Figure 1 (cartoon, rainbow, N blue to C red):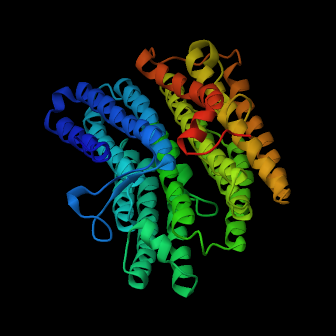
Figure 2 (figure 1 turned 90 degrees about the horizontal axis):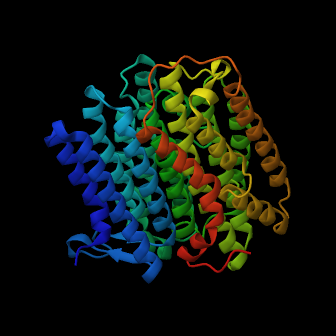
Length: 480
């Protein structure tokens, strides 16, 4: 029987080889490879749903020597999100990269990134996480600079340096843990770790390195230019998946490795950084002159919301209330992934049609590009946190947890961020419905309009209505 965990990593690798070897059929092979990779990833999620956690030891070497793959409810949920978002981006890319060398360069890098992302979500040891994190960052940088424009190259060179610094910092923490405990397996390290200077130093180094890659405030300086100047499909994957992967590692490490040594002060500090990110990112999004730059700053704010969960998780004992907080965090992360992918893809349609994405000059967009405008509105519903989106449920549970733990001040941050999100999304839509016509440069295709619309619809409606499925996948009871 084929190992579905290993297939989730190897299928996109094989697709990368095929599109490189057969450039004349790159679009067809790209779609076939995307469908195959998505199906394999979703198969892993279904198996976790049916049987619980899965583990594989490629090569027959188990812990502590082997590099294992493992899937539980948390990784399976993000793996499914990555599969659906990446499949939609792949279909969109067939219309976006219709000709030229960028089409030939996109697909091999795209499948390498997808393989690295799947491997990161399934890795069960700290060193394999480092390898996949590095591969993910390198391919993301190459894709971000695909346009060859000066602004894009400069932004992604900065992204590259920041990514290398973050990876090296993370690796230093891994070295400390291995020297102290003699294992790299996540479960074994978590069981062996004890409070002390070594464990604390490793926690700071690894969290700091990943915070750079996740663009957690104030380490976000590289994100807006890198995301805003990349091609639309690349901006979507950077915001929806790549940044989310770094945050996933922070969550995974704090839960499974450093859970016994994390202090309320450390969790509170991460919450404060998240609060600053919510307010600062939302304010900068409101002031942004370009649609893609607005979306990039919105990513900073949405990552901030996720950080607000940490002090609440730290203050909540094991039980249904803590389970609800953790599931709500994952639900908000997934909702943001779908919403931001849909928003960036729709922004790409607007940019191609108008020749720019300057917000104050988007008059007539609603008349010329109704599907793209509707996608922006739906994505905005999720970013604001309006019902029935998954973000609404996540914010509700977040505020409930803040009240139950006596940390009411986080509610003020959530309310301010929500109002600012409503303001910047209303600003975009009000300009789009102006009567001044926006000149059209080409007629959009269904291959570019439908993926953006489906992603935005999923974030605004489907995830909220199907939230109970996430609780079950993660092995928790029904949400209160």
